[in-house]
Length: 104
Image (cartoon, rainbow, N blue to C red; front, side, top):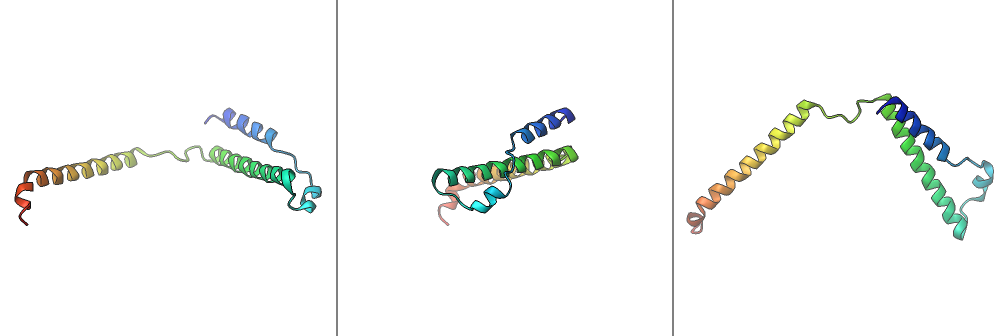
């Protein structure tokens, strides 16, 4: 991610984060009806926005985060190929000797 793209996302998130209203909302507690539901939605959006913003900041600090190395890909491909070959061999052997295994 380019530095300018990360900066732009951060600015958008900061602009959309609702301002804190201070002690007025803290003293009310849980509201009833529509106001209570709206307060819960606002808190959920604020938590989600904060989490996304923290993730973007982490990505800006560590730009190589989440990259898979070539060695890891080679190991996974070899493991999957080996598992498919083993399963195929077992299937062929069972198909070949199926008639002889019926009597066991």
